[in-house]
Amino acid sequence: MNRREVIPLLLSAAAWPLAARGQAVRKRPLVAWLGGGSQYDQVATRNRDAFVQGLREHGYEDGKNVDLVYRWAEGDMSRQPELAAELVALDPAVILSAANTGTIALRQATSVVPIVSTNLVDPIAFGLAESHNRPGGNVTGLLLTIDSLPGKQVELLMELVPQASNIGVLVNPANRAHPVVLRDIEVAVRGSSIKATAVEVRTPLDFEGAFAPQSQRRIDGLLVLVDPLFFTQATRIIALAAAARLPAIHNFRQHVELGGLMSYGVSDTQNFRRAAYFVDRILKGARPADLPIELPSTLELVINLKTARALGLAVPPTLLARADQVID
Image (cartoon, rainbow, N blue to C red; front, side, top):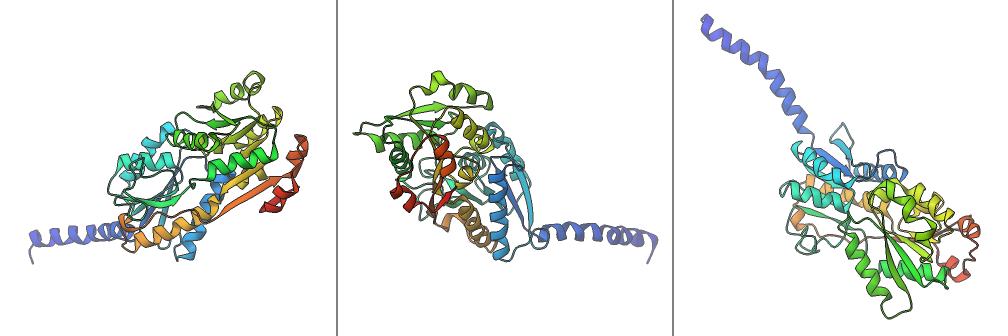
């Protein structure tokens, strides 16, 4: 063997371990997470832990047979398109979206990378799926709500505050799902003596104005919709509602645990845990197009009696009897 033959062989031998290491990195599928809230937020971290637990139940361990990567919008939905593009560029095997707005941003960034959403709102209207049974694209997952939920939330609030005539609905104008939910609420109260009024908050700077006395004189109760900004500002919303002596109903039990009055809605931790099933199916070769979008499996009612007493509210025994948890 002459010198000209030896050098290419040596170069090839030196390069092989690098190539092998590159392939080894690719052997573990990359699962990406796009969160709308903050990694330090109690609700967001509990949901992340539920998803990780779900992965473990399906045999996946971060750093062993799967790699997890996270991006957080910190409640700022304007960041989600940028974060979505960043995650897509990593070429993950699947992306989990923790907010409907994030799912929309991801779908705009890719029609190829599989997306599993834990919080879908009207996916057909938003062009995320062709139908619930056959999504037909690269998005699947779980619904955040059911058709009757907003109306039921208003009904529960009215049961607690029967003299109320005007229910405020805390909305973020930047959230494309909120007009859909607000419309459902307006349909639910149509024909009754109850009025639904949008209370708009777009940035953290808007909260004080939204809860100012001059703004709240016309509101007898408040329904807080689901939004990444409202997640990250949950304790602030609860404190402002308490200061305004405004009875409020939330969607998630965690907000009642933080001092909110009442919640009725989907168990988001169950949705995140169930999302691991979709990820497992996709990692084993299933297409999102063929995985039916699921209804939420659990709705729960939680009441904080301490907060009710602070607001001077007497919780009806019939309401307490239906509660899944009463915090005192």
